[in-house]
Image (cartoon, rainbow, N blue to C red; front, side, top):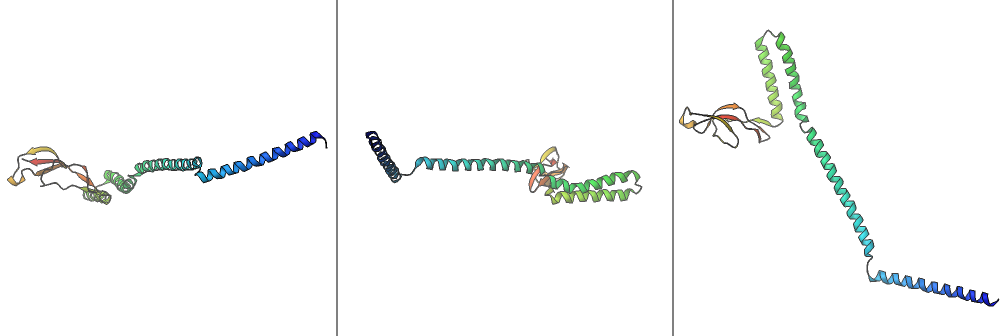
Length: 183
């Protein structure tokens, strides 16, 4: 072996031993770093990922509930209209029979039956007529359209006549009655 080959071999051995020492030092450094404390960058990345997923889930929930609410509002009255359709059919038949009807009493009975059917449908959906005759006038739930002298002293401040009926829907007033109050 000549001199150059010996130097090259020694150089390679020196480089290999330096590389081994560097690897040992890196391993010792990472082991010391692991013993020194947790990896905050990894923890941050994990928490940030969880946060982004939760935020996306929440945004999707908001969008879905908004769509569902809009759909509910669009179809909220559907059951009421479906219940009224048979009454509308009866009214159409009554209208056709008016022209050819000779018995007024039978026609009146038919129209009365249709009105009863309509009232029953509306009552089954929660609509109720307000009974106001003889009650004390309450400006919160009554609309006074006139005041007249009371025919009797006990009727002062009470409702004497009702010009337009009032209605409640499931206990809440949806239309106030228009009344005449005794003074």
